[in-house]
Length: 206
Image (cartoon, rainbow, N blue to C red; front, side, top):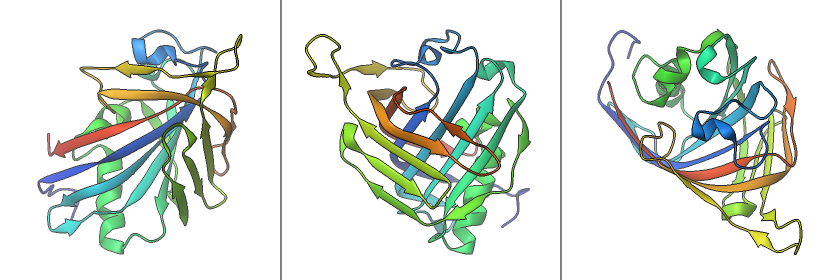
């Protein structure tokens, strides 16, 4: 397999993300991020998928990214994080997907990046439990979701964002975090800010 020959591919699964924005993340509505900059991590957990003849079932990977302004303004940097359990062929396929050369959401993100660091390859420990999902990727990433709470009553506040033209997911369930930090070539630490999870279904090349 080479990056100049892109086979047909299709992946489905769950995406879990966290960022530096306040609850609700204005970026979902094409508004400026809460603090003027965008620092966030997407993690993809493939349930079923293939890249040509390479099966991707069960593969996990993510990208921690920083932009000095809004995402579309560019000049961003990214650190890929890949599950050490992936085979060499799976890692090559994920690398091609993340590069944007095969289409999918990564093709959009790639146009906004000026620096992509070498991938961090670590063991992942993931427990899916909706708004209580926890993700640990070696020493590189900790993402512990927790429900948002009503500031008056203290009761759980649930929210969902429907994005008919969303390129990461068409529907995101909102939460916050008790812990969200990234260490390595890209670093960040934003507990108590926006988090979300949803389903994805991508295919290509496109």
